[in-house]
Image (cartoon, rainbow, N blue to C red; front, top):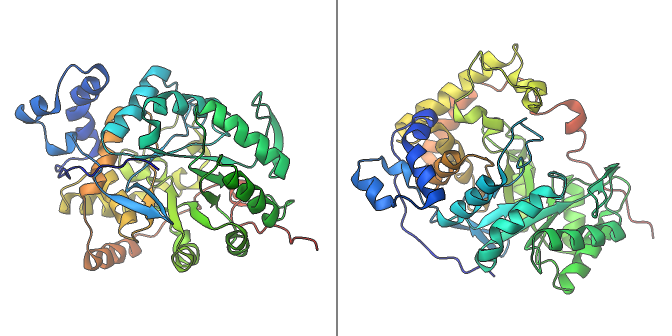
Length: 391
């Protein structure tokens, strides 16, 4: 288990994300080069938000993680059409740990395979101080990364996938292993049973599901206790509140939130005329269409108002809002930028009381979401129920 140390909380300054990036440019460079200490920056008058620290710890089942994790997905630029530098990414991951992050999430599908290699290289020196999660479930050749199409959670494929993960992540165990999406061709009892065997072998420590149907979740939990469910959850995507979150609370399962900043929308950096470049999948997301964007920006205005009220940035208030939903809710914002990472870690210091949460939600209700969170095709992979186990 990781050796997790409590550190002092740092109060966030009254900054929007763009001003945060300006004021932390020097900090980001210093983190990479080691050329400037945080005490020196503090003496120079840099706002407190420039040096945040994740002090909080939360439980996903019995697994302790930092209250804010790091989603390691778009490290090859395949989702947002960017071209991140490998050395910068390794520095980013290590800096996140230095800022108190202990939970790092990735998947074999990211790259595919390559992001696990980057994360493995970054975390090898601090392996026993962190929690690493990864995911299986797609038709991917675990040796070559060739996409064979569709989903594949056949037991033998899971075993091969995990052996490949262990090599790429340079580790002897996966702390938390998720099924990335429910395979409609494989009974979940076979999936959970295979993971249970891998846990007995010491290759895996905990089991999770991403975007599962609720009956499937309960069936899996009966075979091998589920530590965490990973679903999209944010101020823009509140679907889990109806059934997923209550079920997780009932069963003692943690809820890990992917895309907690709604693909950057909740950072308040995307305006009415923001254009997405070639290869950026947000160009196909319903939230960002010309018809839906004006209404969604009205919702972001509420987030900005609360960020000002709580002396934080929009990203920090959006993450704090998630953490206010319960003690086992953990957001894992992803980024390839050092300053964004440091901004996100500052959310740990932002507290929203139950009364404030009710007031916040009332304001959000007056500015409804426009459009679905993803395309119909992608959404069809969520909430799927696995077939019954044949006797």
